[in-house]
Image (cartoon, rainbow, N blue to C red):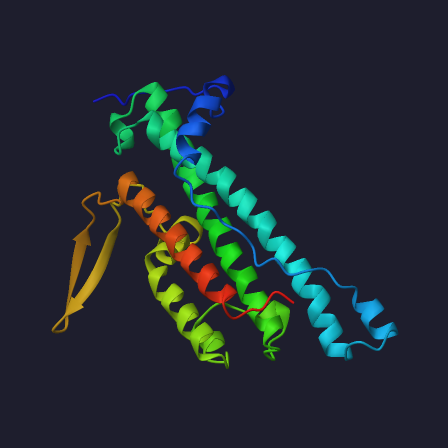
Length: 241
């Protein structure tokens, strides 16, 4: 049986129209950074207002917060492209997609993967802000938003909020790792593997399972809600200095 051949050209890819953007962003949640005010560390030291460590902390909280705001902007743009591609429609099975559906599906997979990248990048920047605010003794390039890091947070409510967020985004993390490091979750899995049971080895054949796009969209929306909850709860404890 011959396979269907589809040729995709550059002009097949379309940016979201103004109407499509409006449709998507009307339900997009509002993400705001912490709002730390700028204070020159050098000025604080010259005027003998703060210690060296506190002057460093105060200025750099502003810059990390600015970085977080930038991530939130790219996160929103990626979401618009991802959901627009989803709403344009496609068959979840690549082999059953029409020419236009293939374009929509390829763009959906691409922007879903990029969304998870910016989502967890935002999470890691929040970890940097927590590290700096509470003066946690971990080097910037060694910091990971995981249980080991969370256990080092002295403020109990911040620790609890961070742990709740970590658990709430476990599936999102699995999707992100699937896109970035493992077998792409939205592609049919026909891989074979070997299992052992009672000293015998068995060969198992994949049956083409994959994660449907609807589940990815639902997880992305849930992850955004979890992120907003984390930010709102942290704002109650990370004082706007």
